[in-house]
Image 1: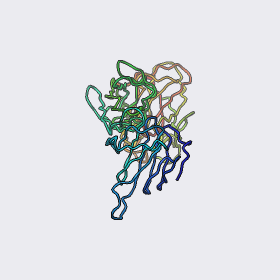
Image 2 (image 1 turned 45 degrees about the vertical axis):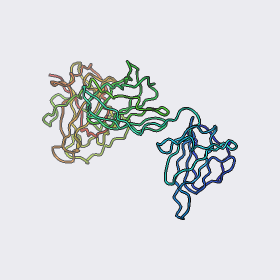
Image 3 (image 1 turned 120 degrees about the vertical axis):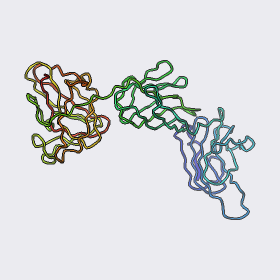
Image 4 (image 1 turned 30 degrees about the vertical axis):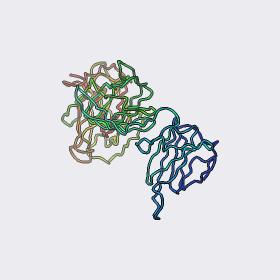
Amino acid sequence: MRVDRRRLVMVASAVLTLAIATTAAAGTLLSSSLPGAFGVRYLPDRAVVTYTVAEPGERGVAETFRLSVHLPEPVRWGFLDREPIAETDLRWHAEDGQAVLALPFGSHRLHLGWTGRPSLPPESAVVPVAAGGEVVGRLQARFQLDGMEATGDARVGPGIASLRLDTQGQLEPERVAFSAGSTIVKQWVRQDGSLVSDERLLIDESPGLSLHVSGYTLEGSPVRRVVFSDITPPTQVQKLTDEVPSGAILVEAEDFVDGGGTEVSVDPGSHVDTHGEACVFSFVGDGSWLQWTLDVPDEGRYDLYARISCGDVGSFRTIAVDGETPQGLELVEFPGTGGWGHADGEWWLVRITGAEGQAPPLQLSAGEHTLRVTGVLQRHLNFDYLALVPHP
């Protein structure tokens, strides 16, 4: 196989895969004395070659094979897997721009550099995760030539938390991507040798964490530690006797006026003991939202109630009124009710505001108001109805 040298592009995306041996001649990128599978990737300072060549079965055959690799400049250094290659083993054919090596059989990775100093990223590293002054988890980091990917989990929630990355040296914010479960950090602010998320994060009890840092030939993790702080736990709801509260301004869940994200299901008769003969189900905690209109007859303070079912361990929602999120409704935790409303006792009436330890009552004027509930942190939740009740 021959490849015109003029097509050689010195960027990270230049990749060539060869399934058979190539013949040595001017203009080729690779040539091998034996057949095999080969790949070559050209980067700013090196060519990275992967190969698999089986050892011949005949007696008397040499213990190595010969591989020639085109480079734009004379080869200066090299690695076979993670072992440095002696300079005496790096031969350069100036007439056709080829580095020539005798290599062992098997599957290996070869780095051949023509500029800079010999370098390989580390194989791995550990990044601790801290919360409340204690280490609560660790991220296992793996390195490639173009950056680092670290993943793991930690016991940090549930709640709303501030996030800080303590860094090694100066780290540009645009080089960093971080996610905690389904929550993605979009903006960072530099602060005293750290990067701080410009928004507080919604976090589950043990979220999966992912940290990516781009950077060519990193020598170690640019992030020393991941720190969660100022963790505010979710607002807890209060289970009540399962009957419509006196004086309730009630709206059936299936009468929502707007929604977004994953489509919900409304199927009369699919659940038992529903008010109004229907309910909303498969309301996913992936950012999907539903909105209802509530007609308030008199100005005053009102408490929010909901009749829900949840076959999971619990579910989380954020709640907004007229486009604003009241204090304490930034994250509300709904309990598991033992099922999804397919059997008696699986629908629970819960109070969301106005009780001790909850968000304060809602101060509402007379007239129409919008109530929006957004699903977060991935879990499902079914709604039968929502209600506003005058605060006692």
